Length: 126
Image 1 (cartoon, rainbow, N blue to C red):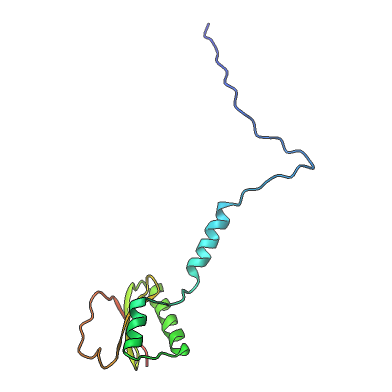
Image 2 (cartoon, rainbow, N blue to C red):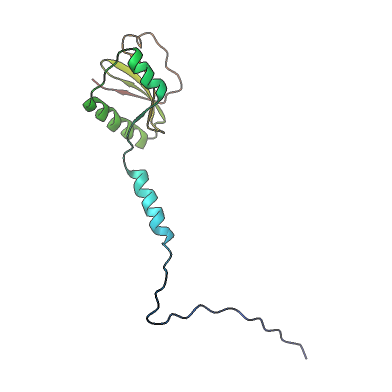
């Protein structure tokens, strides 16, 4: 006759009334939080290089104009744009929509005879 082997499988702990039970956060909550954060419009950051160029070239952009640029860059990002040229009345900006960062800035007159490479979208603001 064959020999039977029994292996003990540990059981789940019993829940007793009156004892507090620690509930681990559900991974779904964490995913939902990440999803909501990803869907929030990103604020536009200005790289040190771009900040230096804005100051050197005496380019002043109002808060309202920055808000408009930010909105348009977020819209471009939602359409799959990664690197964009933003043309404004007084400036031309190269913006990484992917990272929501202004990479560089130049005066609009300086941008007239320039060749812009590695961009996949243009935003024209007037």
